[in-house]
Structure formats: C-alpha cells, structure tokens
Length: 161
Image 1 (cartoon, rainbow, N blue to C red):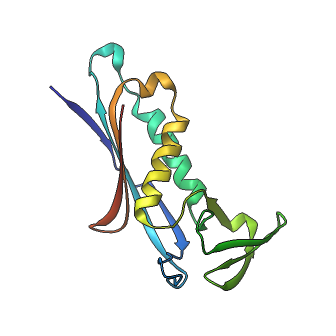
Image 2 (cartoon, rainbow, N blue to C red):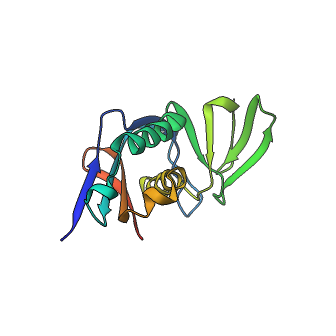
C-alpha cells in the first residue's frame, strides 16, 4: 500500500525574471513568468507516530518562493555568465556577451547552469529538502517538486529515499 500527500497552494508561487541560454551561446530576451510550485510526498506510513505536519512543509515552500519572488534569477554556473562586479549594491554581469547592471537585492544567483523549469525544480527541491529535518525526511519514500511557468508546462524534480 502506498500513500501520497500533495501541496499545491496558491501561496506557492514566485514571479521572477530570467533569460534562458541556449547551447550555441544565444539567449532569450529578459522576460518573466508567474511560476507555480507543487510538492508531492510519497510516505512510508500514515500511522499516527509518522504524522507529517503540512504547516511545517508549507512554511518552507512559501519561504523559498518568497526568496525568489520579484527577482531576476541568474544561473551562476552558466558558461556564458560572467560576474564583472558585485559590490553588494549593484551586480554588473555579462550574459551571452551582453552587459547588465542591476541592484544586487533584486537578483538571486542560483548555483545551476541555466534558468529553465527543469533546473529550477531541482534547485527548489534540493533547497526544500535542506530546510526539513532529517526526522521529517525519514518519513518520505519520495519527494517530487514541480515548477510550472504556465498552465501545462513545467519541470519536475523527483528524489527517492
């Protein structure tokens, strides 16, 4: 027998700007999406002593969404990304040969190669799991995180334990 819980609340979203980069060194123009996050957890047990508190998990999902909300997301590990200056006030960078200067507090540098739904789902999933206690995670058989950029279009991170 298997058991699954899911969290796809309205507060689980972030509105962010990004530029996807292609392997030939070209990129999309700067644009944004209203990203939505869904989390599915396969449970080892639904016995009383293994109860999962939705509130704890929702709080962490919402905190991660808030950190990325209304920010420019940049892939720090992208081969076509170069930081020119980051003095805490402004971030000056190049992406695919184009120069940008933006206020530092409006940017989130993510340790990934590209800002696409697939990599955002992986990064979000890993950050979420890092925020949960080992005791909570020990109750999961699997964790699935979906990040959608529009209805019917997204990426999924799936991890088994």
